Image 1 (cartoon, rainbow, N blue to C red):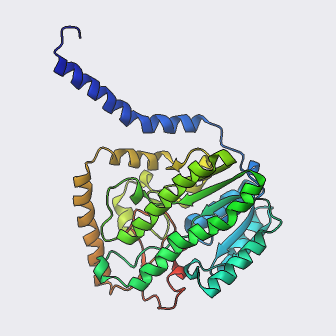
Image 2: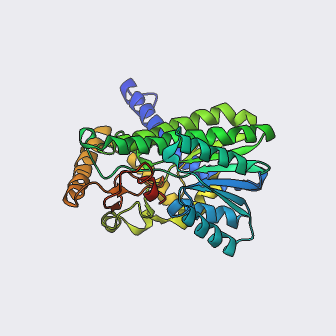
Length: 348
């Protein structure tokens, strides 16, 4: 190297820096895998889960119950809450409480009353963990000017406003005890790709959740509260359509139970988590693709989604639960226009 030209040495150094940067993610992942998972009971004996009646939310509630945590479940459908509570108690010797709370009604008289009941339900409980899982996606891939703005408003209320209000209600109780953990379920669209066209508002709400989570992590880490943004990629739930599943390698798509077992293991280990080796690999591979190529591919793929939605008559409600890569979703027809209609379809 002593006789090598300076330009060659510079290229070697740049290459070494680039390789080191590429290796940083997998090495950090391996380091965390070698850690023993945290005992979630150290945070408290009760966990709160939003959107727990199906998909990732239900699997997470079951996993936390399997680990011996009592549960306070929040959802908008009383019958589904009762069924989920009964199913959990039939399998695990834990206490389960539930509160009917429609997050699409936050900052309304009905929403304020539901939040009051939620706060009352927390009284006397050693709440150590909050899992913000509930989310709403758009009714298929649409240009912003084509969309039903009221549905976007409801989506923003659930994904952004509701999550913030629930977190703000729980934090004072964690601060009083000096311990706690908050998990916010996000979307692969926020970390893997530079844009998510035609699902713009949905992915933007999840980007808010990502920044919200990281900032809370910095704010409250010194106060004994761990805040983590968990990012699912492809998971077998109602969010993922059969057409998309058919195009994916089976080992790239985790079941909800597989995902939540890994996700629960990572709680408290850093501000950002992509649970599962296959999901982590997908994230790493996207780093090799330039932004322009991501944008080129995504707009074409999502225009195909839009065409499918329009052929199906449009106006459907996409089921979401935080486990999205955006529009790879099942569409249910003809959601009604009442304020809670979209939210009734969101617990995937």
